Image 1: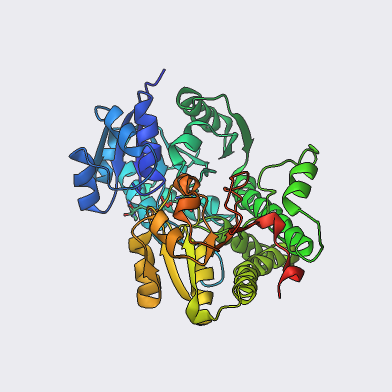
Image 2: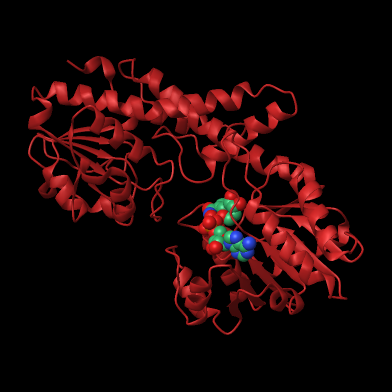
Length: 448
Ligand SMILES: NC(=O)c1ccc[n+]([C@@H]2O[C@H](COP(=O)([O-])OP(=O)(O)OC[C@H]3O[C@@H](n4cnc5c(N)ncnc54)[C@H](O)[C@@H]3O)[C@@H](O)[C@H]2O)c1
């Protein structure tokens, strides 16, 4: 069954989780990273990455996973190699291949002296055309071998979210496999069938189609989120209109679907914004306009401004000056269960409010240290969600962490106003003197 040995290059947020998942299902896995400190930590049984269930999974698979900085060791002692190095965005929105190229060269050199067939799987998100023109080219050049004959090449990007990487990896809706021949695709499909907890569908196609599919999917989701937020902005102008009810109802139509059709904050994080921009960059590179992707990005960038305006109105309504109120912000990471604040809407909102001169108190269960690096002394840092709630005259819930649901009347300041962007307090019995606004219930025209 799990007789193939697997190597994973790049033991970062996705790579280490992938390595741990394969190892937990019985595969012998060798992880490679250029960061020797990270390699030492993993080999000594420590987890260098904050991710739900990763520590437990690493413990479970400790006999099947080891780490090294040595590519030869990894390539010679495994049959399949997943490349999961970072591909950060360039100024034009496309993805950098720098780490990928270094990794491909090292794999190619190691393949030179290997006689057995080896399957190379590129998992890192890449621009369309990269697997063929960069991956195949570098591997053939450096190994002196022929792609499809001496080694295989597959593109297999993941659709997972930080905070639920392990769960998403083991329970994918579908797996995308871009292949140059059926045998390689079959080999990869077999590995996933032995690894996943569910029975995922497989989308199999050639390399370039898979590369386009990866960024197209995220581009479509960002469009759906932005559609819901645009609808919410219109509903905010109409007395009685509730955008949450509208979206949850129209989502019942199977042509639309409920997922990601929920007014809230704009999208953020390390994948959605950049994949959308990359899609537009790719379209322009091939001479096409990318009006939809461009517009989605533009509308998304307006979302923090919208929330700032609502906060301004709420403060005005309280008949107090900026100096007399504290705006509390609960949640700074771009989503719950991760410390990541990259492209976080909450951080954007706080920065806009700082620029307007508001006094702000913030709290996040995991990202306060990272946030300090960005927000500095511009805000007060609460030591708990309850402290943040207690001091806030206007309380924004910007990331729907589970622990925020525990906040009740005794934790709130008398006369406070809550803007619950994710409606996690919906149905809670709040004191009459607390004003509560779910995101679908904001009324701009109500403001004084
Ligand atoms: N993190 C996610 O949620 C996610 C989701 C979907 C896709 N992806 C894609 O997966 C890829 C990896 O993302 P990540 O978030 O895990 O990145 P990361 O920055 O967390 O990890 C990258 C790792 O690669 C290592 N590395 C760099 N150069 C190397 C080399 N030459 N050889 C060996 N190791 C090397 C780094 O030391 C680091 O540990 C990216 O292309 C990203 O777009 C990530």
